[in-house]
Length: 139
Picture: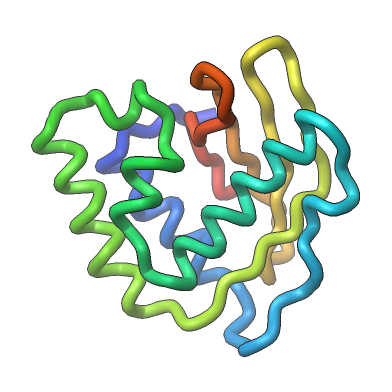
């Protein structure tokens, strides 16, 4: 899997968001089928979809991305927010289905599907008590 910096991650996150069906209603929360830590990871995916729907690039970059991505420097973080802010304006609906979650220690991987026929994966790291996005592979 290609590891992405915030600057490179912004277009991938937007690509995942833009690949979603443009409809007003969303399906039931896919996190409901999981329990415990798997559910906590799936809920971060739902938070990503929610923040995308609200076009909240600031929250995606600063609260949902892992510290290692945020700490690439102030200039990079600003680029992340601006890249997402500009691109999110093109999308009008957000819905992800989390198909599976695998946890190994303080790392997790969620297999996620939108309207695209191919599933992508989102890698997470626990910081220190919450799961944060560490990498995205759009498939």
